[in-house]
Length: 209
Image (cartoon, rainbow, N blue to C red; front, side, top):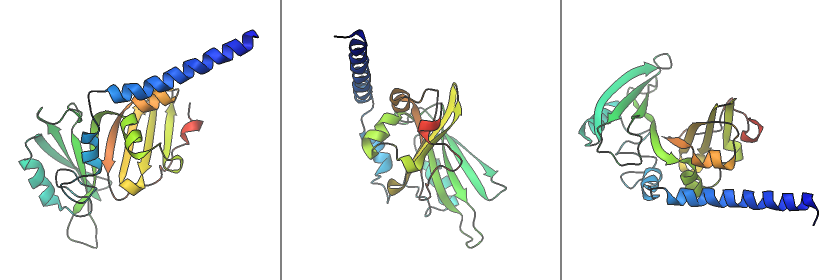
């Protein structure tokens, strides 16, 4: 057999082993997908929903009440954003939260102020997770080409993907090259909102790096 053919066969086998290993690694993580399913397909209230907070439904006062009463939540702060058009209500975890959540980073509920209504309501919920992107891919499918993109180079690349039918968006910071391995294993931040859409201003993932 010619040396070139042997080399190509070896490379093909190596690539197959790496891809298989990626999937096995995801399944071998200490998290099962029940925690993620609970976030995406909440049984507490009509999804998207987290801890009883529903984007487009839950009022600002109720957000504070729900967070204050939650046994996982420690401190709560808030700040105006987007030229005072909205408010970001953030919290820290107290250590009793499930392992799926990143204990070093808390969560955020964005409150949207609208002129047409005196009732300010939650617009999105942002949750940094101790969970690789592969889990969301296994649960919801491959990153949709029309609803995913990336921006950056070298050791800092911003990656974003939306699943509009599930009211879910994920984002992550990773590094080049954007191989299947790098994408599947990078920890993600989950965003729950009725207004997830195509990534504005980002490039197709295949064109980055």
